[in-house]
Image (cartoon, rainbow, N blue to C red):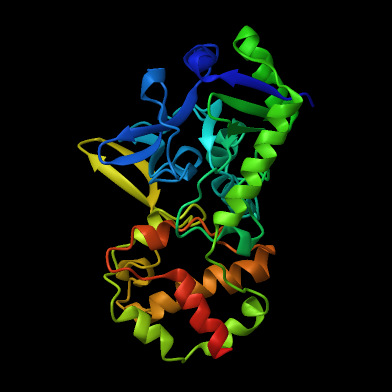
Length: 336
């Protein structure tokens, strides 16, 4: 597939060619950087190490209405599914994460809400300056990984190199028309050099060989209590994790009308495993911390063949008490 490039002075025009599509890209929303519908190309933010909130919020919204109903009416009102055509500016780690999450939402039942959004074209943005806590190389990823992407963008300084990877990526470039031009051989070489330099910047590493099989053997190990001692149970590590996918379903009723909605939940919350009887199999943060690590690095691997972590570093960056996942995994390997 032929590579193209778009010069930065034409990037706003490039986005305008996609205006008829439902386009999402990183933008500042309140205090956080997250993916939002593009209504003003000037608000698109690509000068970042990564977004605060991963693009899972596009494919798997934090809160979504499944259907509405009213007393006396036997028919439910289901909102239109989809609403996403293009997601632009996705870091390679987040694209890989979404492929991992696909395993769950297309496992024993194809979730129609999720599957419809996943039809969107995913445009990646290679990392030229990885986050200080990134450890994607340890988990099979990389600053220019193409897994889960339809097109990969690389910032060359004065332009973005556009590498189509699938038929959807080719179609997007066709839509771009004259805002893009054919890339020169030197552009490809410059991108490859930047990708190599980015890999060299990633210094945090963790060894995961054997962890999936042996981790449950540390069930009573003291490291879980030691980690839990400082944990606040706030759930930031799970809400901002691109592979965490737990949710709750509730009915909200006002008067004679109501809706059934799905919203993110967290295994780090006490209520998550609280039974109607009052019994809780994970009563303290020790059990919840142990479950989080075991789920990502053992249970999910055994069930789907993937580690439910891509090394994006968000859980480390945003933990208010500086709990470090890489350090936990180092202790796990030491204990094993």
